[in-house]
Length: 243
Length: 248
Image (cartoon, chains in turn green, cyan):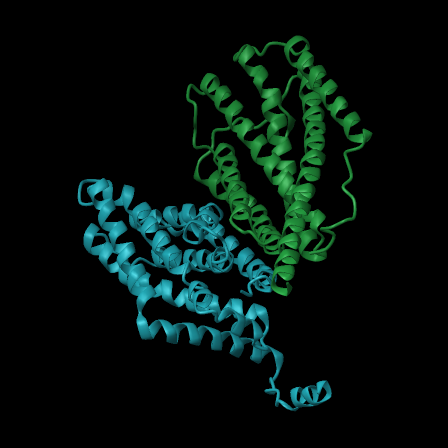
């Protein structure tokens, strides 16, 4: 595993603080758009407003799982620790956003379908996605050696992502009633709802990038600490046996 | 001294490998034969897996009365596949378990063979073992439910489903033996990934039991074939990376 021990610990720079501020500003703007600007939906009423953040969370979750896939491939190719740090950070954030998407979706479903849960394709696939990446995180926590952990989780990250279309296909043939927002005919969404929708998407993407840089920096420090501890024990062991 | 050592190393006769294609297959077969020979001597894994799968069948019989009314065709396919997948997983955890316990992974790693060949060999042995357990479970399922299992759609489903499940399971088994929570980790890895197999196998089996036309089988056969094709390519490739991290 390459690139685990640089000589200095770099603190997060001004760039990150700027990113965080921009994410916060955009989330506030999205909130205004969602609650003030966007029109109230005819059939569902105000409950429909949860849709904007729900879709944005789901989008962010898929984005992070795609990132896990890409960085897993890159790790196997290059063996650079940075890719592994990116992969675990993206996976963790993805699981958080999937959880939020499932929760908000459940609240929406209670109102729209009259039930908290429905075994339909997108819901079921999202739940399975959540399970796959929870398993990914558990696999990581169960393997103490850094390079083995990185390789095994990269392998699982690739298998898990390649599996998603097959899972979706199998469950779609199994049952379907979810409203399709982006269908073949284009967007099934009122033009007046566009600002809230797209602002939420951009805002959540920025929150994602901001969280990702923070989490990757944290993972870097954690792995460096682990490596330092390992070396310290190794040095100590050497001294004891010599003296 | 180094010079002497080097000369000595060079002097060791290297077994000549004939044409690459045939050697890959014979390497894989050698690994598979080794595993099956070891299993034939003890029959530990096969018998344990079989009894476990049988227990699952029996326990489900208390959950859903398998003789009553429509229960057989309604719950039957699900029960059969829960029994098969859980049983197969118990067996899969031993694909690399023994190598790890007896420290023979290093021996396998030192073999001058293609690493994908080791995967293919391990996969083939696990496939034979799982098929043997299925051959024992299917008649018992027929006995308990009074359903015929000699249906072409059902048998095709069993074959395709088993291939995909064992393909993924063999790869994950190599990873799970290195995890701290070994027995727990394999199902956590295999089950969510194998969901398409489980869904398609259950629905395909149901089509068989209900005697519906072959056209109804098409979506399920497509899923099973797609899963098998994707993972039979992906798993041997990824296994090479797993193998590099397997020593001690």
